[in-house]
Length: 72
Image (cartoon, rainbow, N blue to C red; front, top):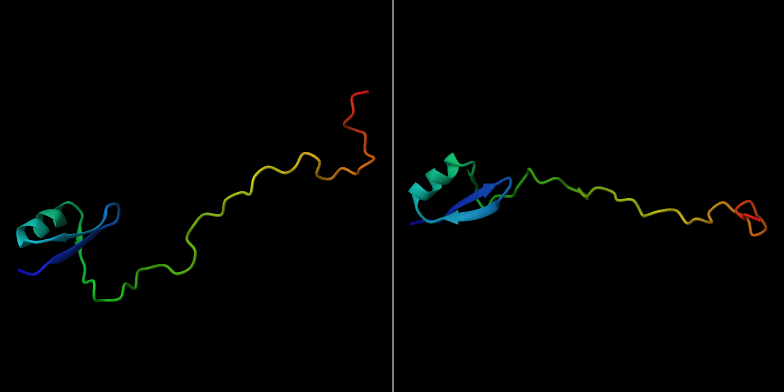
């Protein structure tokens, strides 16, 4: 009774222990794979989205003697 390795794009990986279980899972979107084979579909590099660093400082671009922000 061999283990059957399955993967799903949303749920990750799992192991089915019976052929009937694997067939049922395949009907639900799971795909068989061989863990010994290299995965050629893996994208290389950083796939994370670049995030903004935050807000700019409020005093950016002002000189020390700039009094345009004063209210008096």
